[in-house]
Amino acid sequence: MGRHRASRALANARRAADGLTADPPARRDAARRHAHRARRRRPADGCHAHRLELAPPDGDQRRRHLVRGPHAVSRHPRDRRRRADPRRVAGLLGVLATEGTEDSPARARLGCPVWRSVVSTTSATPDRAVTALAVADWRRRIAALYAELRAATDLAAAHDHWRRTRDELFAHHPASPLLPADREAFTGLRVKPYDPAWRFECVIQDAEPRRIEVETGTDGVVPFERLGLVEVPGVGSLDVWRLASYGGGLFVPVRDALSRVPGGTYGGGRYLLDTVKGADFGGGRAPWSLVLDFNFAYNPSCAYDEAWACPLAPPGNVVEVEIPVGERYGDGRLTL
Image: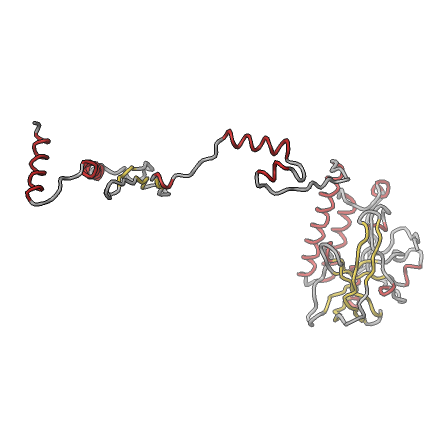
């Protein structure tokens, strides 16, 4: 009998004499392995190796853990997750690919939601994508420009910056509303010098609710709801409109008496505010007020190209006085 077996037999005999049962082999082997691993040298500092240890034995159950890593992962059989059979997954995908149509029995059999296809009637051609990206960039630049205007303290310098920036966009931007022939001869927009007397802060007053629907050739029917009106000293009242569709925003156009004069303003009116497109001077100092600066009144895109869809000034935004500041209509043509 070897030394270890003799020692083990002697230990069991002593336990039996004391009324104890012999050490179970599984428990004994587990304790020996645990003591052996406890004596193992740990990895040096900076080493990312993992050390496999055995938890202290608990009856006949043995639980192993992966320690010293960023995550402790249990390896106990009860914690195992059932993995999907790749062949079964491929079979399901094949069924969905061949039978996954609307109200498909295969999808109902698999417990999958039934989808309904929406087929677009317009094709996303490269030209359409380029146009959409160009318009998005134009609006992004206009929004950034008006953010600078709202923060400006020198209004005359800000007005000159507004004019020069728009000249650059009209001359070189791919979304410029100028026709190709007009762009070649373009030297700058006709904008009158800044006059601080035409800047106002107006409180929005209550007005009878009203809704108008503007039919356009490119955007369908665009609905507007009257939010209220403002009284502008020396000018008259102007309706304040809310865009009642996706995007929202405030809209304040104006058509003055110079729209009937050759070389005056655009016959369909000019825009003071069009916040959905970035043209926004923000609120005034008083509650429920708007900043209206007629020096920044500008022509809509359809003044230069009829392909653009532009809401024109409704009757509540037509005034009988001349507004001599802002952008003029370039070549003096009358459209209305």
